[in-house]
Length: 129
Image (tube, rainbow, N blue to C red; front, side, top):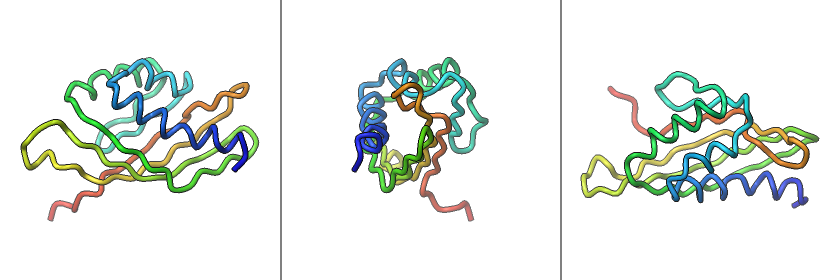
């Protein structure tokens, strides 16, 4: 694994650490100024400031996340990463059981620092039937 690919691969660990610390500022710092966050069943969130505000609202309930990258590819100043994650909410309610999910990140290198440009994920829940 090249140094460049390692630093891109490391983005998952940085996301996981910031999320588990409930640190919306640290999470937002991983995104570019013009990034687009695409949460499931919600409108797109555009720009680092709005992404930080989104995370501030999303991190209200205590939870933890485990992110597992599957593939990371970096070419010149662009990269992508796909993987899976699970999130666990601190609650004893059965409906809060961890749900597996998948994600795709598109990143851009800004002077040696990789920033997330696009972040989209979906939950592996059965379709309402």
